[in-house]
Length: 211
Image 1 (tube, one colour):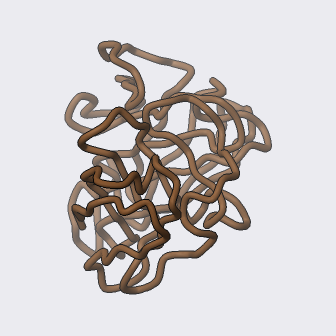
Image 2: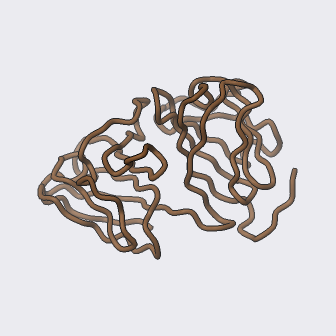
């Protein structure tokens, strides 16, 4: 869902309009220069106390953006901090949850190998965005329109203004039921580190075919 709200500077809740609690929320002030703030349910063991920034490479930070409160089936919470709730500022928020056969919000643990982790989504992805939540790293973007076959290495970053590039160390394979990490760059596959992701299906049906 897409939500518009106005900051009050006081602790508040924001209705999100989804049928269940969102697993990822991205917020941005529209009327002042402030970062893109991201909540992700797979970020840490206590995700409601943490956030990452969509426009930066920084690792997960522990700060009270979400009023130390997990989203519910009707609202997400915001603290009084100006990045998510500055008085008088207009804000836009994008909220997501996993839907079988359509979208997946989740995480995986890197192993540092070209034979990287397989991530089950339940569908063949059309789009994957990932971020190293444990350390610094770019928000990698891969899709099936710029790369129509594996390996998927036409890489872009949500936090950069760079044009796309062929990145053998940041690539992943799109499979019939998820994706396989093949790159070894720290942006996508450092051993032992946690990576959060958002993926959407190529065909929103129960069954899909392998490439």
